[in-house]
Length: 75
Image (cartoon, rainbow, N blue to C red; front, side):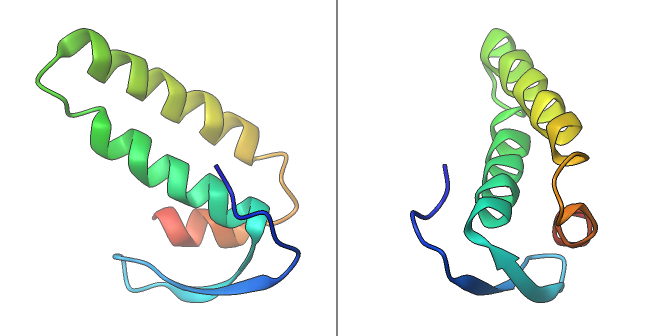
């Protein structure tokens, strides 16, 4: 999930981080926030699946050129 755009986006996160992210990095941040939130589902199977997706995407994130900004955005 990411904007289909080549622009750089100004982003403000719930953790008070503000900065710029590419569409791809913004998509990663959005998905990580969503997976984290959904991992607390009352449905244990669904929650575990979302937690697994979170950790898979987080591992992938370390190969992204904007990893430092993504980490600041999700911290």
